[in-house]
Amino acid sequence: MTDEEVEASIANDPDWADFKDIDWSDAVLVMPARKKAISIRVDEDVLEFFKKEGDGYQRRINAVLRSYMQQRAKPKKRA
Image 1: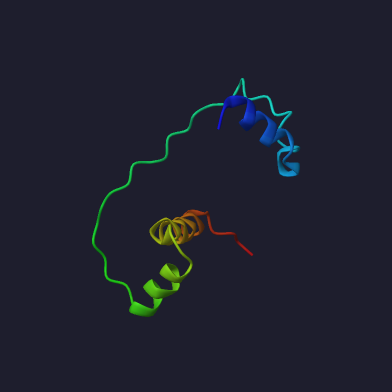
Image 2: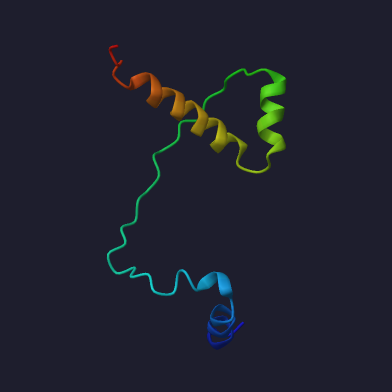
């Protein structure tokens, strides 16, 4: 596609309307944290559950582990 064809396609896309007025001039590139390759053992059904969701299953497993870590790191509330 030419640049003109891409621009025309974007202009005709109703989903693009919400994004056309965004000012990207102050955008900051955020590099994701470096990953460490490891080998862990997980139950087969747990692995299959995440794989069944499609590509990115390792990223989703990491997100679940991060959420758990963040919840455990929160200060305990006293009653």
